[in-house]
Figure 1 (cartoon, helix red, strand yellow):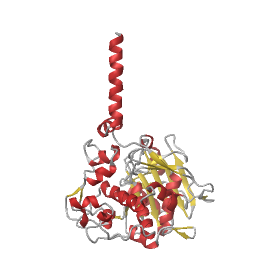
Figure 2: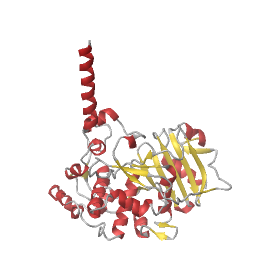
Figure 3: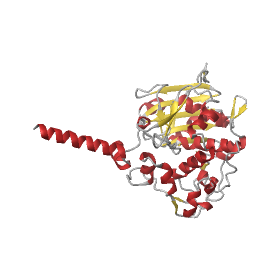
Figure 4: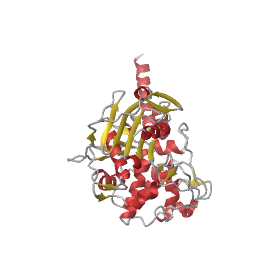
Length: 370
């Protein structure tokens, strides 16, 4: 009996080791993306400010209307939030918080992964790198920074192509395929190697296709341009510190030693600090009198452009929900930073899942009431 127990324990230990040490094992063990995934991956830390910026509390808060359009039907706003797997919801206008509530045991200090909202932050860092002269132009071929990809035809792919998701990249975005690109990028430990394996399926500049591999290529370009500095250090220097972020945060990396940031996902922060990133873009890259990102970069990142395969609702890693000048950073499971400059409005929604709500329409409906 004792020998059977020993064999069982030994096999259990081997299975656990395998599951924790390979891409397929981690995919099987952790399965789909989860709001607590920030605990799974190695990371680089971002430090809060000793003198954090804080939004005002509105003296006369203006709450959303009792009913808001979602999924083409009118439902009670707060009941919708409570029943939609939302964990945080903020509405900020004129630098004042009009609505801030947390659900499912979360509060203002709870960490939530950005998931693909980090794409918009990665785009901002590309803009900073151009401002700093580390990257010459969006028209440069990406092979100026990743020369090993010339063999696969990427010398025809510009930085602008990957920013606009018009690179023609062959990339399986399926989140349920353990052997697909997303699994390799999300759970794998060799992002740089995986980037080098990527191929094209069509000519760049002909069609928009949302592929997370584009943003990881941006991350590798940025890492190569920075040389001795990590992408996280650059985020700390260019955005996190100047914005006087309220909380520590982190960026998940692919491996502990000499890891590369998962720039297509995985900045782990709090709702209020995500809102501050929205405020930076609301104010055209200016933060309380200091221009942190050029106005032109913010304008080009959030305008409607249908040239060279681009489409009306996406530009430079930002989603564009309407022709009213508003724009959004979006992550899987329903992470949103919505910005409406005309209303001087920022909305942040973080959740465990989308929760059956059409957040695009809901954000626009809320904005219409302010």
